[in-house]
Length: 471
Image (cartoon, rainbow, N blue to C red; front, top):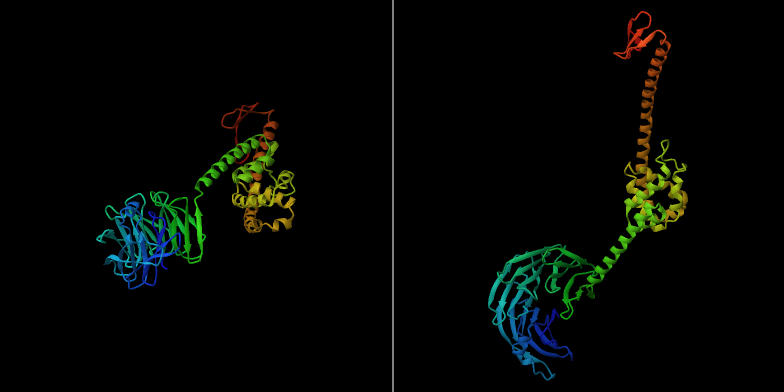
């Protein structure tokens, strides 16, 4: 059997096509074959059946088939209404037409039963009148074989998928391509409308099902539960909140739309996060640092964790020590020990990841180094080695720590020049003070142009600041 489809109007018949060159109509209730259609000269790869209830009432039921013989056939099903359940009725083809230049791979009948579409390995899609198979238009744009076509349940458009890894939306009004959906990495083998024609589901040879929004053209989600080609997607006509998929991995999967549940969960999580953020802000303001750290780690707010750790280290007006900020023995570093000791392995894993980023910035290196010191002080090394992220972070921490030490060494060496300048400046002022003090009994500072006047002879002397002498 190659394909299977059902009628939304009767809901008691399904129709199949096969490699034995036939199509068969089956009764769903009894499981018996109601009718057989013979006439194709090669494998029948595509079949479709009427969808409109008015067609059933008017006793104009029909089926469409196409296959490797490139022939499109219309079959009358009106003689199957009064089948007595014994044997199989022979179906007659009312119309036949050579539809394509290569094998027909798919057919689809519009919801109003007026138009039908066929797709082929010749890369084209052709539209036909369902009454007499009169050609209406040929849609071209795909670069590989057409694998599936499907009409929209609400709009005058149809969708197609191809081996060129694209999905195309076509207008039935002017026969133009409205939109192309790209994103699959392998041949797209099946496609269906869903959610009242506003979205598409497509399955491909890479085992992925993608959900597309028609209006935006964006891929909303990707489902990865098949391990091989996905050949069919079927949307429940009674409940569009679920669909089925089948593939070469011998799996038939049922999918359920959980959008509302996930949205409710997202809103609930958002509300909880807002409450936790407010509690975090209050804890920081009231210096309840333990609770603040716990909330910040749970929320994954790395900046809040950093500001809280900084507040702990700078508490009581104590700022970064000037002598050796990386001295693990400094008392200021031990302030973090009581908080770090309460962290779980998952907390340590998160914070180490943040610390690795903080340590790359000289502005936050002091906090990160204090945290590392406390972490190794209160946590057993065996426990740390079991945490994968800690082991992975060590090389990066060591590399930037070495850079911070080099930077501090340069600053320390540069401080000697500053000491020398300050000392020189102090000696100069000391010399001037001594001279003026010793000469106060004979000199008076005029305050103009650095001149001194003798008290006895009223002679003026100019003090040369560069040579430190009177002229």
